[in-house]
Amino acid sequence: MTRRILEANENYSQLEWGLVLDMKKASHRELYLVLSIICMMALAPMARAENANAPARDASAPVITIKNHVFDPAAITIPAGQKVKITVKNEDAEAAEFESFELNREKVVPANDAISVYIGPLDPGNYPFFNDFDPNKTKGKIIAK
Image (cartoon, rainbow, N blue to C red; front, side):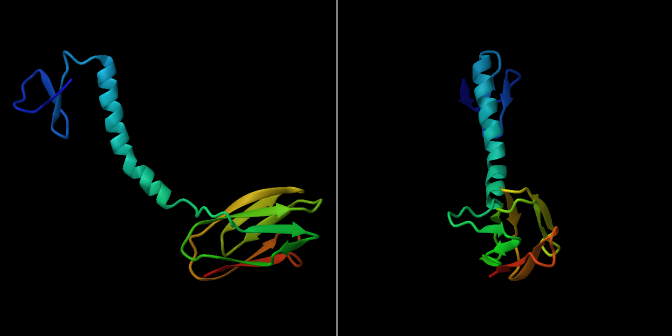
């Protein structure tokens, strides 16, 4: 199916890496295989770049629980400079809303349910959050170190 380029003529199509296909002799399956390999090679760098921005996968991912209109724990520490997934569980009979102006996040947590919130990457510092449905009582903060 493939040959090294010795000389190009009208019967051959040149590919970037120095191989040619005899277009008259190649089957559809062979052409499909070569095109598939080209596509995979072209898309591989994008997959690596996407994985570099993926959230940190840690078995000890932070969990914040809302119970009796209080965040528990009221403060969590996450690594600065990394994207982190935080789970917010609502054990109350009413819906709550995880909100933070500094984090630019606002997400409703249904009663007796949980949500995931992706945070970061953050600069070191404190980032307050609150329950918008009960902003005076239910408060907490994320500490990025």
